[in-house]
Length: 513
Image (cartoon, rainbow, N blue to C red; front, side, top):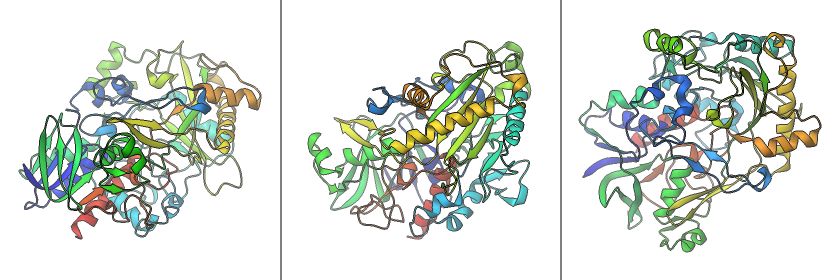
């Protein structure tokens, strides 16, 4: 099979590019996805996303043991289906701050330059104070249809603590709090497969191959010409191969194709096609800690899957099962020296333990603290053909200090008058650490990923970067990487929105050539 463009990975970025490139009728596009269909109730039902964890819809990764987290290997879910992680995330649309993009210091990628691409993607329904959002894009963004009453109390608690209520969390100023904007359409998840891919699949010039795991990008005479996948199949790219396999899959595929650190390739008996030592390096992720509070009112998501709640969802797309779990957020600075928020507080009207896989000990609430700008860096390498993921959590001491300060902020929220009717002490598994040392140990023992790995195919204007400012892999013609792996640093938000933005801009960059 031959196509003009071959895209590897039908996650957020791959869906955007498949749709945008196939808008041109004379252009042929192939999209290769290792997983399968996203047609499943647990994908559609917002509150059910954790039911997908550890299933065939999940890559089900585990990191290398983390020395600073008590030697624990950390579970990393990643979507393995059409829509990728946009089909199993918490649907939070949070761009971050303008500083996040300006600090990349890459030509063409300042916030003023990328902001139009956010707007191109966005279809804001409901409030749009100040015209922050786009209103005619493919991705539906709205408020939750049914907000938990405890979430309203959390918002009042933030105001009680002197935080600023933000009309829009995606505006120029993000220090403050508000309800979470979600990628939903009338109570259903609205993934990139819904927004971009499904409409495009009716076009005759787009071919989508599922259950088709890519094994290698074929490079001949310095140019990417094909992708080997499945059980010996090959698809040829007349113009470009575009790798959209995410912060783990993209460096993995480049290394399997002979593009990477020569030492890593040599250890795995892979012939060197192009030396690029930074492939797999610069790995960052948002690490989260938090506190759990017992709720004396039976209003939380414990037991949410009752028959009445299920009927409310199935019949009217309303009720507790439309919740994205992380219903409200606050962005705070733990020090006046910080140029922008360095910790995000997330409120859930549930005891969200073990990624939602462990039943709670009763009705409870979670206030989590997320480290937004980690100084720690890790790496993705190979063991044979499999990725080895070492995020290097807390290898920079400042990261632990900020998370302890974030945990204190969670406790301050739980102690407010606004939350008093909804909090009666803490609940298992929280251990009530009191001193800084005890809090640091709680972080080491229980901190988990917030599912935002980036950086492993870093974009930059310098020769050491994996991809250039137009996302072209240095030293290999006809090959680009377009996904979270190209982000030089993490944004002070969530990664779904910037990945869509990157893909929207990449489509323009491709057409310029």
